[in-house]
Structure formats: structure tokens, C-alpha cells
Image 1 (cartoon, protein in one colour):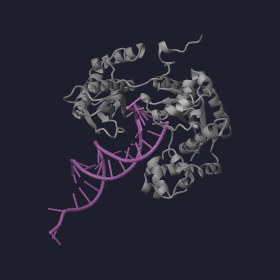
Image 2 (image 1 turned 30 degrees about the horizontal axis):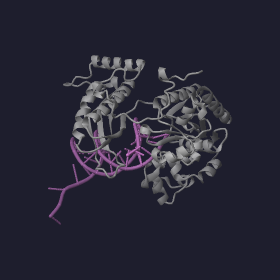
Image 3 (image 1 turned 135 degrees about the vertical axis):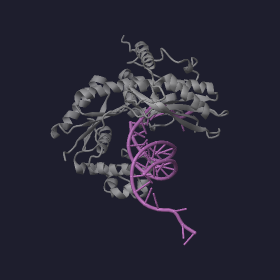
Length: 421
DNA sequence: TCTGGGGTCCTAGGACCC
DNA sequence: TCTGGGGTCCTAGGACCC
């Protein structure tokens, strides 16, 4: 069997780094970026981490620290971050031949075909080029499996100056793993961490040396694979990007809503977005799931959560049709007297648009429908999103999310380009 | 006042068939 | 008293990721 070598390239504090590219005054300052509705802290500069702001902390609990230390705060700006992500990934694509974009800020690569002695040099070069071309600093982990490359990356980020760490050497792996809590391994989170500790396994090294079949009995095949990966046996290869199987669009309203009209309006907007994504990947949906919920954190108010699915006779990507069906589901789910916090839609069982089987009795989307959707998508792509929208999306936007500190969309909106004076 | 959004994979159990 | 056994498919829910 040929020995594999993986690299993991991971952007450092990605959202914060994006903000810093176009606003260098933020360098050296503590900076945080918030989730939608300014809810939680989702990205922190190293200075902010040192001040003890935890990942995922509710923002309102951190306001004291923010004021005290003059921390720069940004609302999420996903258009901007998404565009910066593409720049990073495109840069990487120019430098390596075999890669898998794993998330908005990381990519796995295969390094086997390169001479084994050159890998450190290659990694340093890749990092330099990415920061030069995009302004985004990255960390680089090298290892014989994906799981170990995650560990290597973590060391690169925390303990090295060059931002590269090579963990191919077995005794080095042991040195790192003996001190690595089992819950910090990629794929082991709260529940399984607790379970494994109850079985007497609290470090990565103990998990590596555990009996894989025994562990599988108490957890699942996923953890069994992790054990092999820790041993250096690669079970997870690069995955080639395939179209999404589900597309979700949901958001909390930014305030509590009781009337169904406002919820319908919000849902219509989420549907419009989801369907755009659907057509963009050339798929059609075979069903939808609509859900609605109150705010689970407000324990004193009555709680209600519900969702419902409907399958279509024939797959569709027509926003109007999906809105129509979703509205029926929403009316079914809605109960008067609750204060709602969030709703959403998931487009289910997506298939390529040209793989559709005919139906004896039901007509598929007509080419007129498809063309209309294409025209709408193009107008919104070229002139700006929501240039054309559905009346059911509303004009008042009284459910729009809070976003008080959003930076300009420097790279995706003509009116928000950075100025040089 | 105030706690994100968008995904994937795996498993257990029920329905159904012969 | 006493009512099969084995296979597949589907779905809901649970686990994880960033």
C-alpha cells in the first residue's frame, strides 16, 4: 500500500483576518466577529483569546470585557467572508494539484507525489503565497492521515513561529498525543468525550491504543475509524466536491414575532435564497421541510417547536411552487399565542436537474418556468441581490436581523469598495 | 433586550415483501 | 399453551463538523 501524506491548510481566525485585510488599523488590537443577529462570538483575534473571550460566547455577556479593553467588534459579513474564502481557495488551487475544500476556511491536500524531504519547504512557500495574494495568514499541518493532520495543524497554530508542523514521525505523534485531551480530537465532541472518559480514555494516545472493536461497541464506527486514523492508517481520503444533498435557509428573526404574516414574509425570504442556491448548483428538490420555533433560551415563556415535511410528485426548483407548498406547511404548524424566534426551510433530496424521471400524470417544471427563474437569478446576480423579489417577501422587512457593526462588503458591492485617498 | 447558520454521516426500528 | 425468518428500504433522530 502506498503511504499517504495529507496537508491541512487552515486560515487563522478567519473572519477577523478578513476584517484586518482591508482595515490594517485592527492589527495588534483585540478583535471579535459576531454571528448573525450579533448573537455569539464566532471569531476572535489572538489578543481577544488572551482576554479570555470564549468561542461561541453570547455577545451580551461579553460587553463589559469589550468596553474595558476597547475590543473592536464586527457583525458577521458573510458575503465578504465567502468571497475572501474563494480567493484563498483559488490561490491554493494554483499551488497544489489535489485538494478538498473542507469548510469556509480550511482545505485538505494530498502531498504524496512530492519528494518527502521537500514538504516543509513546500508548506512554507504555500503559506507565503497565500498571505501575499490574499492577505490571509494560514497554518499548515502535515501528517499521514486527515485526523493527524488536524492535530498537526493545531500545533502549527499554537506552538510554531513558521505556522507549519510536520507530524509524520511516529514518536513525535506520541509526544503530542499524550497531552492531547480526547475531546480535542477531530470528530470527538462533548457526548463521546464523556463516554470515552467513562471508559478510562482521556487522551488521544489512550484512544489510539484502545481496542477499536470494543470502542465501536460503545460508540460507533465513526470513532473506530478515528482510532485507525490516529494509528496512521488512513481511512478518510480527500472527497471530491459533489453537489449538496440538502440546502437549508433559516434565521432567527432578531426579535420575537407572534403574527403569522411576518413569519410568512421571513420564510419567503429564506425560500428565495435557498432556491437560488438550488438552481445555482443545477439541482431540483424532491421535497421540503419547514420548521418554526420559539426561543428555547426564554424558559419563562411557553415553548413550541414543530416542523413538517412534504414530498413532491416531481422534483422542482421553481421558487413560486416551493413558496406555495411551504406556506401550506407553515399554516399547519403555526399556533396562535406563542412568541416565535426562528423559522426555516430545508430543500430535501436534491437531484441533478437533468436526471429527472417523467411522471405519467404530473407535469414537470416547464422550460418557461426554468427560463423565468434563470432570468430572475441573472438579474439579481448582475445588478445586485434582491433587485427582483417576490411580493410575499414583503417590503417592510420588519423581521430583519440585527447587524449593528457590519463592515463594508469591500469585495462584492460596487458601492462599498474600499477608497484610497 | 440579548444565545448563529448550514451541513454530513450513521443507526435503530418500523413497514413491507416473500 | 403454541402463530417464521430473513431481507430491503425508508425515516427520524442523534452524533459530529465549521
